[in-house]
Image: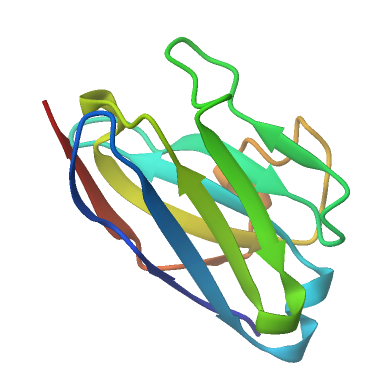
Length: 129
């Protein structure tokens, strides 16, 4: 069993930065891939970034107005924590951000919500213009 708790969200002006944390309980966390997703009001939850258990593999969303180049995912297994550093924030980044843990890794698997076994409760990120 893995429990995930996100933190670090808040209100920031456009162009600013935030670092989200996903703290996990459970000694098996190191064996899980972790993904970050976000959900804006009235929209579906969308993939942002993922990192494999060993940190060797990372993958970022590749859609219009992508986070790639602005966001960085990393993890510290000694602290059971995954981070999402968000720079050059835009108003369209406003959403609730969720972290999730799963046992499988491929670029096709990590982008889908159904690939994850555990989810956090989310943290609100609001970017003002």
